[in-house]
Image (tube, rainbow, N blue to C red; front, side, top):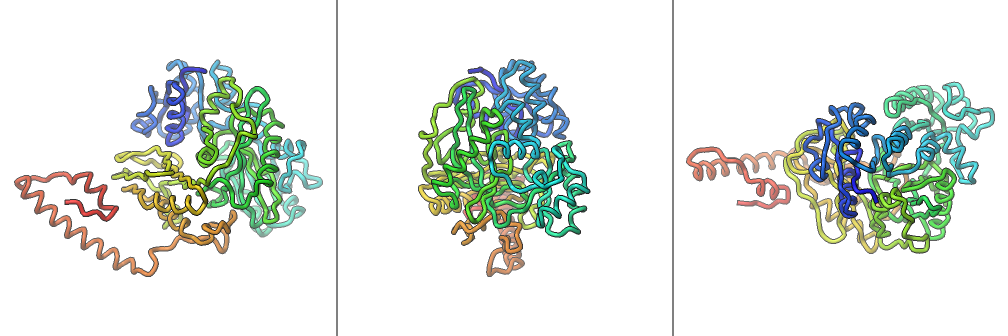
Length: 512
C-alpha cells in the first residue's frame, strides 16, 4: 500500500476520502482554491496546497497544478473523488505517466464508457440490453454524435417522445426531453450549448423515452486479478431535471431474482471494457420489469453510502486496496443485503424558489446524530458557501431494519438538522418523507418533474403572513428584553449573543 494520497477534489467527498485514508493509516494531501482556503477538507488533511483562484477551470480542473502539488508533497497516489476530473481519461493517463497510482479505472475504460454512443455500441456487442436510440436506427451511422438533420430524422424513426443526450459526460447535463417535433431544434441547440460548457464536447445522440421508468443502478467492484462482483442496486428515481435528490438501497421494485439478473449484466458490462476499481452501471427499469443500460459511471458515486450501509463494505477503502494491487476480499456469495438505507442530498438551494442556488455564511449548524444516522458533510458554522461550485453541502444517510423504519429515522434526523444563514433543501426532503406516494414506493423518474409530480407546499392550514407577523413581534420583544439584560450586565456596553442561544432557538428552546 502506498503511504500518501492526494485528493483531487473538495467538499464532502474530499472529507470522505480523507477519513478512509486515515483509517488505513495513510497520510493525506488536500488541494484548494482561494475560495476554499478555510474549507473543512483543508482542515482535515495532513497537508494542504493552493492550486489557483476560485473558478474550477483555474483550480480543480487544472491538471498541471494538481500534478505539481503531487510532486511537491511526495504523494504516491491520487484519488479524484467524483465530479471535476474524476472521469477525465487525460487526467488519469497524466497521473499514470507521471508515476503516480491512479485510484480509479484504467484510462481505456474511462474512454470506452465516457462517450455514451461508443458505450452503447460496446454494451450491445456484449449482449447488454440498451434503450433504443439513434445509433440503432437504420441509416444513422454516426458513432460520436449527430448533426441536427440526422437527429431530426432519427427522432422520426424512433417515435416521440425522445431524449436528447450529450455524448460526453453525464449527471443530467446536456439532456432534454422532447415530446413534439417542433420542440426538437430548440432542444438540440440547448443541449449542445450545455454539453459544450460542461464537457467541452457538443456531440449529442438520441434515445427513445421510456415512460414510467425507474432509475436503478448497480454498484460493481473489480480488481486487477480478474475478480468482479456487484453490491446490489440503488434506487435513484427521485430526481429533478435529471439530478438525483434522494437515493435508497435496496429498491422496492427489485426482487432477489431481478437483482441477481441485473447484477450479472452489470458485471458483464464492466468486464467488457476491462474495468477495475469501483464503478456503477445505470439502468432504466420499466413497469414490466424490463431493464435497459443507460451508462456506466467510471468513478465513485455521490450515493455510494447507501450501498455501504446495507452491505457493510467500505467502497472507498476498497478503491484504495484495489489501486494498490490487492485482490477483492469478497466473492459474490459473500455479499449480503441487510436492512434499508436512504440518502438525502442537502444542497444550498431554495426549494421554495425553483431550487435557486444560494450562497452566504452558515451562521449556525446543528447536525443530526443518533442510532442509524450517518452524515457526510463539508461544512461548519462560520463557513462561507460559494456560488463557484456545486451547491451540494452534505449527504444525510440513515439505516433501518426495514424501509418504514428508515423513513421514520430520516424524518427524525431531518427535523434535527439546522443550517442557519442560507436556504437548503431540507424542507423538500421533509415533505417527500411525509408523502404517501414515497412511503408506498409508488414512484418513478417523473415523481418530481412529471405533470402529476410532487409539489412542495407551504405550511398547511396556516396563514403565512400571520405566522411572519407573530414571529417578528416575538423577535422584537426578545431583542428588547435581551438589550435590557445585556445593558444591565455590562453597564450599558453591548455584548455578543451566546452561540448556545442561537443554536437553541431553531429547536424552540428559550434559553436564558
